[in-house]
Amino acid sequence: MSHVLNCKIISHRRVGADCRRLVLAAPQVAQAARPGQFLHVRCGGTADPLLRRPLSIHDVDQEQGLVTLLYRVVGRGTALLAARRSGERVNVLGPLGRGFAPPPAHRRVALIGGGLGIAPLLFLARELVKEEREVWVFHGARTAVELGCADFSVLPVQLLVATDDGSAGHAGSVVGLFRESAAKMRPDWVAAAGPHGMLRVLTSEMRRLDLPGEVSLEERMGCGIGGCVCCSCRIGAPGNWQYRRVCADGPVFAAAEVVWE
Amino acid sequence: MSVATAVEIAGLKLKNPVMTASGTVGFGEEYAPYLDLSKLGALVIKTVTLRPRAGNPPPRIAETPAGVLNAVGLQNPGVEVLVRDVLPRLARFEVPVIVSIAGETVDEYARLAARLEGVPGIAALEVNISCPNVKAGGIAFGTHPDMAAEVVAAVKRHTGFPVIVKLSPNVTDIRTIALAAAGAGAGALSLINTLSGMVIDVERRRPLLGNVSGGLSGPAIRPVAVRAVWQVYQAVNLPLIGMGGIMTARDALEFIMAGARAVAVGTANLVNPGAAGEVAAGLARYLEEQGIADINELVGVAHRAEGGTAD
Ligand SMILES: Cc1cc2nc3c(=O)[nH]c(=O)nc-3n(C[C@H](O)[C@H](O)[C@H](O)COP(=O)(O)OP(=O)(O)OC[C@H]3O[C@@H](n4cnc5c(N)ncnc54)[C@H](O)[C@@H]3O)c2cc1C
Ligand SMILES: Cc1cc2nc3c(=O)[nH]c(=O)nc-3n(C[C@H](O)[C@H](O)[C@H](O)COP(=O)(O)O)c2cc1C
Image (cartoon, rainbow over all chains, first blue to last red; front, side, top):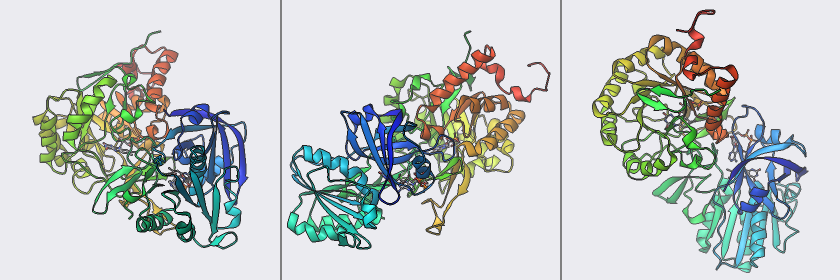
């Protein structure tokens, strides 16, 4: 069950280069949320900018009733959000969408995040670790500083990093890093999020390796609950696909079913 | 004080004047967790067509100053699925359901009306002759008085339901279309549909929307919509359903005072899924606060000469 909630900001910190980690008091969300789901966030309080902004749930603390978002300041909405201080309230709608559903039989899971695509993967890693699965996290960013936005050190996972400028870890794309490591680690399932281009290359790599998994998609969104059918993506097989709603049918889809433009 | 909020539109009695605007809440089901649909005057559902429509390629929505531009392209499962699966599911919400229809030809409108005739769970038809996001039909009928009249007459021949005609603002004089629709037998008019517009993505140096252009809605268009209601109220003696950027009860009052007997909440639902219910509650509160016994007293009140008495 999702709700419209005015959540108190518990903390709001700058992390990485131009990112923020926002911790909200949201017990209902913390109870209900699944990894891969998102909150639809009202960044300002007025009619301009009008729409909510979808942000993945980065982490959840059920005991304390806290929900963490991790976002990059890219435009007006996220800039307005970044100006909000601890103690203020933020209006959110959620948790929304269909999250990751790793089948129980798969025990060796690779999580691959490009840029802010890393956001939903911490929450997912936490759940997978609870289920005693082996988890590799591949985190790609433009620079070493940007890698600092997410902290996986709190979890017993293996972290591999890639940067575009070579300032940390593998120099180049996170998909390239995954390709190099896959033979050694032999994952049996993949979950990924990030820019379209990265996911497209990754899914063709997964097809080549015959690896199942899921990807989280982004599309410009209206209501976030499936009513306005604005955030469409193509799901099915090439030549036989349908438009599905990223907000309500996704944002997580089987990697093999995404039909890229 | 108990206040009367009921209104009558084309013979249809509504418990209050607040509806959803077509296409902004799908078939209403997604909104049920956030919005008590039974507290609305009516639920106007997403426009349906004769055959299923896939809709336009994404992106389908762009934010604009105090508004949004959409180019969904009438994605819908088609009238057969509506009748077989959707309408039976909507019965439990206990709200009058208004079915919006659109065709590519006059004949398609007629066949839609015929297919829906007598189907249980329908309170009225809204004839969408004003969608700017499809290549054939849609807005073409809403911009020529003769074609508008032809569509309305064809629908009227095939239905016993009240017929509401939804007008486009993308015309030189909306009154000519309103008069044509009225002459052809419309029982009420909905106005306005979205304004045609577009956004360029400067980074990509390309149109932002997959469909190139789209329809503008939200607070940005409210003054345009209020003016349209004002003009049509003066020209045509039919009940009007006003819409365009209604976010609050106060916004709805502008439309009612300009001459709308009912209002529809559209883009606001995308921001606040409870918006339509809040507008309905806010209108009742306003009547109480102002000591107005019946909301109908406010319809068109802004037209009356200052100091003049209500007619
Ligand atoms: C399901 C989902 C989960 C997401 N999770 C995260 C996250 O955890 N962290 C994060 O930093 N970003 C995330 N994003 C992207 C984030 O929504 C956009 O960066 C944000 O909406 C930009 O808003 P803005 O006003 O700052 O930018 P502007 O460019 O000014 O926004 C203008 C409009 O475009 C939309 N828009 C712009 N970029 C995107 C995008 N990439 N995807 C969808 N809509 C966009 C905005 O929502 C807004 O409607 C997610 C997107 C989706 C769809
Ligand atoms: C996402 C979206 C989809 C829409 N789809 C339809 C539709 O299918 N049929 C229709 O008659 N109007 C459609 N409209 C127009 C609205 O019903 C309404 O006339 C218009 O948006 C103005 O009202 P608003 O500013 O309150 O949204 C749509 C509007 C939006 C924003």
